[in-house]
Length: 230
Image (cartoon, rainbow, N blue to C red; front, side):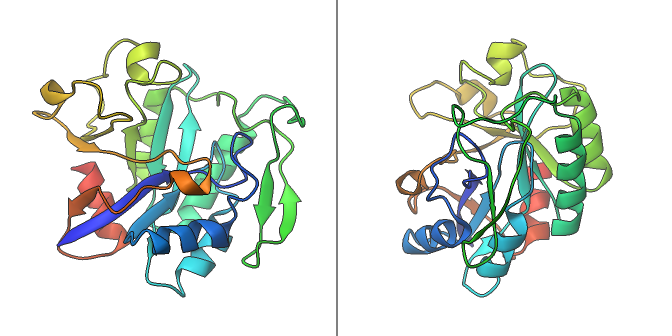
């Protein structure tokens, strides 16, 4: 069956994201756009996954636990997990590895919400920083817990792996790539990779319309992870 998705959405925990990207607003906008699955993938933290999970679990939408991690090289990778506990443990480890650069108003807010969209905490370290882990180390950590890692917006000039490293590493068994634009020619990548198109939304209106889909036999987290792992 066709499953419509957006697996790259930022909440207001990401400092570069709009303050109205609260858990309820994200889930409700995704429902208005008739999506079946979404993933909140904040920079280097899983802080808003619990609230979003509690909201999504009472509505007809599946939330995939996710985080967008910046590697030591400056590459953005999307990491997806089979359960929220594993995502939180991983997110806490990534957050601890960030440099002690304090987030200021210049960068934006880093808000953590409860399921009523009330701010219950703020993170101090600037989340849009590089972790201490290489792309290989991140891949190994995600793979060890049965998750899926994919390279984010590979053609983007900032933080895309082709711009940073100039190539796709062949030492990792990555089967899925995120393409950030339909204006680029990616035909030669389709032979060896599955291609997904996400919004990388930092504001509500940018969340994907009911356009992109994957084919799954079952609508659950495990099926999505296995699809991404190839």
